[in-house]
Length: 278
Image (tube, helix red, strand yellow):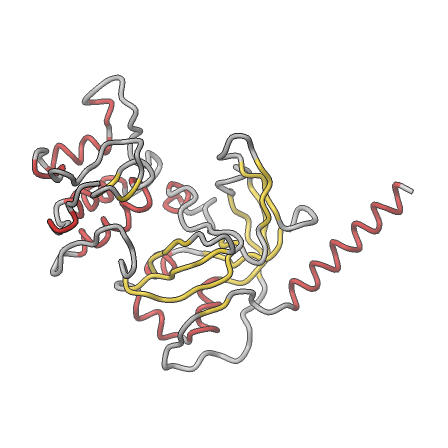
């Protein structure tokens, strides 16, 4: 009886695998660019990642994200890298936006199944108590075993139960204040880095986390901290004050100093109109 159940389970797992490989890309894309998209669907691929939720290495199968965007939107999306982002919506209403420049520079997969086990779910170990969550219809994963940059950014840009996608200008419809018009590229990068590394703990005009201090109201932090000192603080808070509850910025990130400078540049270029009372 045990062998029969095991055999049935294996047959079901193989059947689901075959269906996954033959199925359509399970994401609805809003809008289209003028250039026609290729007729053929992207190749089915396999990738091994360090999953930031389950905190183990897992193999997934699915479609390369760049190829999916080519297929759905045509190759013109690639020209929008510096100014646009991919907005993703999940079944529960959660939304996240990832810059197109990140997609162009790193390897991502629209995963539709796990290789190591039946079922398409994972154990979220970043919450207490731990809980198992369903990933269907799609889970966006990033190669982060060789890519130290993506590994250092944790779970940013890993939406599961992903159902919809669209392109938008960076900051469009985002409550987080965007840099003033005419800001340099450092400030624009800093806007994205703040969302990845800082927003979980810090707020700007009441928008963001509540663990750390507000950084823009009633006075922007760059108005009373020298920018160079602020960069030093972000990189190594313990060198200023012990104890303190702030961790150093992404210790394993190969460009952490540049990121810190970009974040400070962004903070100094937030419009005053975004300084309303939280």
